[in-house]
Length: 436
Ligand code: SF4
Image 1 (cartoon, rainbow, N blue to C red):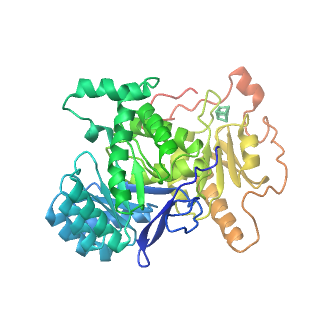
Image 2 (image 1 turned 180 degrees about the vertical axis):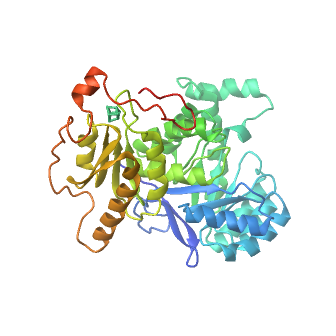
Image 3 (image 1 turned 90 degrees about the horizontal axis):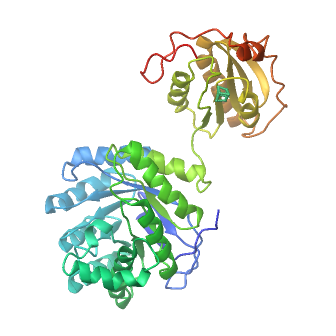
């Protein structure tokens, strides 16, 4: 991991909803020193902002799910009017997403929103931009300048412009796009700097992960504002997840990125969950809740592990502490993973052996694995809370059980293909995998 790139810092929020800092490490324009804030997770509501009850409920659900900042669309005046009622009902900083109508930005500022997002592709009248800057400056609100690929492409003289600008980054596969994003940013930010306004975050999203990586990398060399990372229009969660994580991981591992929004054509709660998991996995945020490890299963599996893992995952949501839990399908890798986990189970022939910090605590039938594992997790959490145990501490080295005895089948039977067959095993609703 490359250390985080130092940036200026912007501050989003207030005393009532809480303050979220984005970026840091460089002094701000007034000379205030800053230190890099943890990378934050953002999302955007999927419903209409003017549907006040639903919008407030959606924001609160996303905040409860871990969103640090929530953005709302304000395409019409009734949306900015609604903000006045929504804002007192939520407990998280709110960003107004403004396109085409600069008045929506002014109205959102007036309503008490915590940050404005502007798009140079559709609000580019100099006077209008200055009006928004001055309104934000008066209330000490930051602005995100978002140069999304889809909304900044110049359609007039497109071929000529592509040739001219593409030459700037002729080595890059998407040279024209990079050039237009950077040119737009330079032109737009000049207006901000002329107004002595520096509380700016930048985004440069595309649906193409390679463009995202190249664009943010080039922008990080040219601007010292915090960067809001995202792959826009990433698609359904199933594929959008890979597209987003591919781009964002590459950037974050290179120290680039101060806040992230993953975007799916799905309930935005998944954007929050996956954004958090990304940051936890890269060690950029302190994990909240359980860290669940599970094997992918293979021809040695001897319990219905996929069902067990899903059941464990659901029930573990009740655990607050970042306990590491391993659910492993057999004795081959089970003891190894159990060594590093706080609570672990590895399976034998329709059995499970359960360990707590390396100490064997139970050998139970397949039906008893879930309740016993959850019992051990709850007990362990209670012990940690009472100060009687520490997370990540291994008390004893695991002595792998005799595979022939305790697990009911064992290496010899496995090698000889004599393990009991699981004819009723179903995986994720797809039947017919019996015989493993
Ligand atoms: S732990 Fe066992 S069942 Fe799971 S993948 Fe490894 S060898 Fe296969």
